[in-house]
Length: 341
Figure 1 (tube, rainbow, N blue to C red):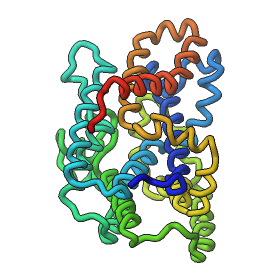
Figure 2 (cartoon, helix red, strand yellow; figure 1 turned 45 degrees about the vertical axis):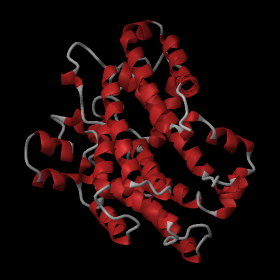
Figure 3 (spheres, helix red, strand yellow; figure 1 turned 180 degrees about the horizontal axis):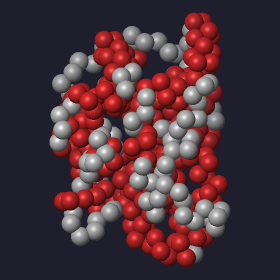
């Protein structure tokens, strides 16, 4: 059965692409210069201007994981499907390591987003789905400070991966505790929506009062992540903050996801030609492949760090090419690789 245009979550597509654009902006500095302060800020025109936009999406990684697992649950991903995606994710992580290959390949393999997705999928395969209890567990686990998990987990390699202790695991990137619970939470929310146990097609009167209260509570903490470091200290800063700082800055993205399910929003965006253009982008439909290709492309550009410092406008040209070049490469790959009948 094909999905009607009015049923597609175009607002999710917009949020996904907007978040990915911000991530590419941050990656461009992180992968090329790997400095918390952009070294050619005074000479760059385009990147420096766009960096102010990107900082509004400093939680972009968590936003993407929430979207990915919401859609996994909504589409009813089976255990074999989750296992297959986990396998591709593991391959993807090994491919990402190639982007930074510098002599000793095995020593450069790090715990990062694709290993995190693979581990999350393998755990989700063992758990029930469409469960309010698991939604509650996911939410409550995300209310526990990351420092607590660090204090109860054993020392060593496994403990570092589980909690993101910064001496290993790429300075604290994607620890399973607490961030697996974000996957658990949104995967089960998607499944509940799919099974009709959570109805979001219409606006509930209670929400008219609830959302303003929630947003009012966030005001003292909004913008905490705006000045996040975008080099060596990015992961350490972004994934290890107190829960109230995360949730108050994550709430606006949750609200966008919520209203994306409204019939009125879906129907209006379905009539919008730009929504259809965004929805047909590789970045919206083939996120995994686009992300890998983009990281390889940006990682390759990191070999030209000194050239970019000497000629800053070349960095700007490279930066604005990331998303269109990735779009073109993945589209060409899809034409070459035969489709399954």
